[in-house]
Image (cartoon, rainbow, N blue to C red; front, side):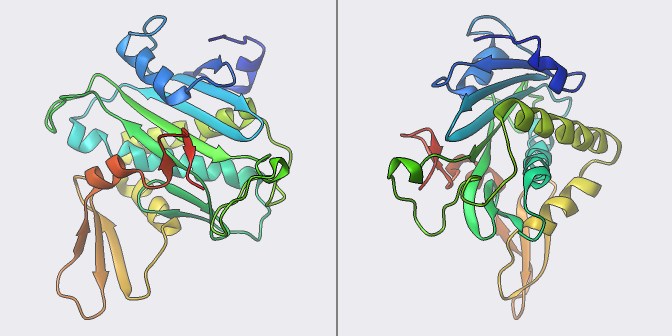
Length: 251
């Protein structure tokens, strides 16, 4: 792992960037840093990122002050920041959306997603020592290598994004995340929740949606009494967008 002081100029205050080697795992390294089991302890604001020509990957260490059942919802701020970083580079006429909870879509095709790690054994009413939010965006190079992607999969290169590079994208995410974290500290989910829901894919029968206190998605549908509940914890663990064998977005 390398600290590139020159690149730190791209990153906002409170963020300490750590550039990893090309095939290292940013999410795993961030968890090791948060635990203090890697090359040393790396606390809140440590941002690990990898620069690969086909994939942008980064992970941010957090140290919450709330019990896990509340603190886990910072994931929604992470997803908002991921989408906002993408929108900086995006052609303006194309949509950026989510599929609950962590799949990131661009113009109807999956381009990446977000994950959350929590300390093993931490109870819902216990304040976790750390959390790690990790993001991935498929950047390009896959089709150039002759590898096929399904019709619901895309890359930044395929979509005509402006020039991008991993440090700038990770720094853009960090800046947007800090804005969300400030909002979280002042108003909780009052802004974060609506911003997330505004990008969430909507079913044909849905009339209203909300996020419960524990993070579950609540969906009100035409002809249905009461709200349909989708488990936040279960869906985070499933991370349907992520391929753990390849350590990249499915596709």
